[in-house]
Image (cartoon, rainbow, N blue to C red; front, side):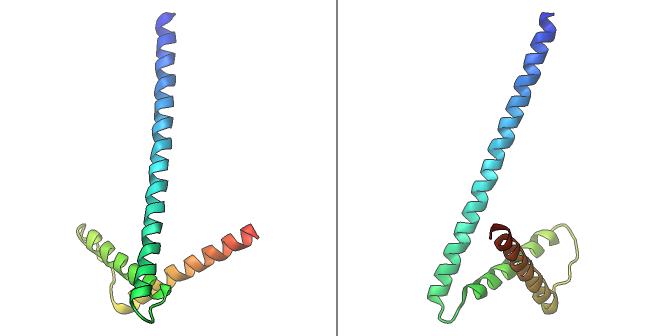
Length: 112
């Protein structure tokens, strides 16, 4: 019947529209991540150049600590309690650094 055919066309068009929306959303997320990485690279280069003796690792440590405090602030708004003594922050920093190094080693092994 004509009604059944019209319903089928509507469903197909809706599915195509949803697929396109998801694709565009993925492109937006990819561009956002790329912009974040470019911003971090610029920050690391600028800070390292302006502060004598500061290595890129020092800058990333500061950025990580800053992110941690931002997380505490936003999570604190939801009344969740996290440990935040210096040893915990240092441990978190170490764990994140190790995971980056492990991830980079895995990529290097995969591509070699």
